[in-house]
Length: 309
Ligand code: PEP
Ligand code: MG
Image (cartoon, rainbow, N blue to C red; front, side, top):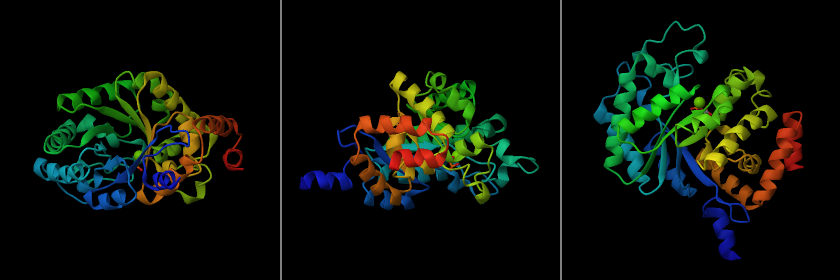
């Protein structure tokens, strides 16, 4: 019993009946790795690479990128690291990309869309990731932000494989992508749901707008329904579907996400112990039952109440 209690505090994520759910950390650089280790994260589920590019008038060179990625990969040797390609634009404008003048930056050339104009930026980044991976023992997965179509996903996957990287995935941040999760999994190896942007684009509510917090609530049944479409697609294809947005840090929501078919949760390290404990307190069948109740609820408050009581 003492061993079980200890595992509930530090072991791999799982329900009380042993259904495994990977608990991963969101990091922006190697500086965040000690915090992830402290809570026994099983790997990195979202390595945001923007940090390296911010406040720069010129793109960081290949060697500088290799070094930054290698630091995280080697600290995570043997574990999974899901690295996200540059997610610039909108709330993260980059001077060297000359994006001034977009009337609606959140709906503009951001995330993977930048590769339409600057394929060289993506090619260099993938080459740097491949080189850093070759120098370390990490299990590197690569994903693209802001993907809307199967064509974009297939083009990205081809570029990832071309760079010699084995696993390509896409983030689900746009409702169009969630609706087509099954087809996306025909061309990529995994999905990772970015609930911050998926909420923003599903509810047409700026994620920075505090006055619209009720629309951005991760318990909104419409958001959960979209997550469920992705989870079902993952189950059907036998491929991983993670959540790496803020919703993954909500311990009470974790069983619902798992019930919807989500196989990993990636979050800020400080949120991880409570999520681990929440999962340890439910069975997989509980998760599925709670997920059904939450999706069927008429509003976020009712969904929350149905799941938490
Ligand atoms: C998200 O949109 O949920 C996400 C994880 O990406 P970011 O917050 O960096 O846009
Ligand atoms: Mg996002």
